[in-house]
Image: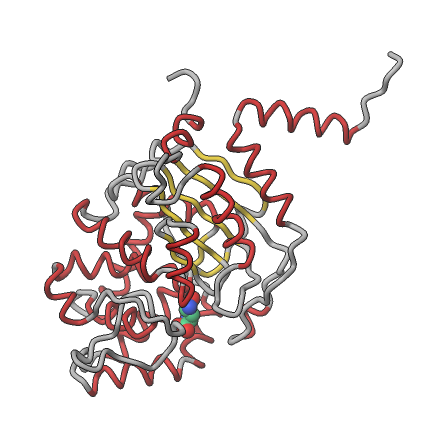
Length: 342
Ligand code: GLN
């Protein structure tokens, strides 16, 4: 043979062939490669455990509502779910109390303020929405159970249904969250002062710290997103995680309030319901199509994953995924990921 194929050339060829089989996988690889050198942003450091995250970690996962998936990079790396837990616990509160009762305790207005702002709606004393800490703590307070352990286990079981596996807490993160959570306690007690939460607020804060400390990876986030994309049924296990009628409640607050005080610009530029967390995760939902999970712990000043934002923005533009796109492309993404035997 006159020409020896080098390892690199072979890899490039194999990648090309794989991309031809699945263009979506090719695009994910391309985006991963493109944004891997981006080292902007800072990992969260309000507790030492989060500061230990490696800013180079970067994973992307897409899971369709039929359960097919493509994933690249560090998609198995575990991290804490943090604020991404908020819409899901909101869903459980809706199941426990119904829309009207939940709305008496927490609104659905975007705030334009930082997620940990100590502010309530002046006329109603309600927290503005369930995606900021005040609203999430009020939501956690609504989770039912005979006693505190039962409330916690109902919350943990709910995340297990979304992920399709038993979930666990990162105990060190949890201990630090509760040890340093004075601001969240202040928010909880301010709401107690206004009668927005009950006397069990200490338990509810504990539940909130626990929900933030649940360990997930990028794949889990994509499965959680795919479950919402699939009307509330986990596409891998077939188990229902949330009543179908509440899925749109979660998606609408994610679209309007899910990305901290970047939510408006996100809705404008990306137009996909999503939620981010300071652990570096983002979950995004293409209703009826797929869930996207991204993990990259370096955050911008508003608390969103820098690479996560870039990937979502580019996916939205390239596939035409914006909710109000005049020529929507989300269905084509689903078609591409269908197994060819179908
Ligand atoms: N657990 C943290 C807090 O409550 C951060 C939540 C988040 O991801 N913004 O302050």
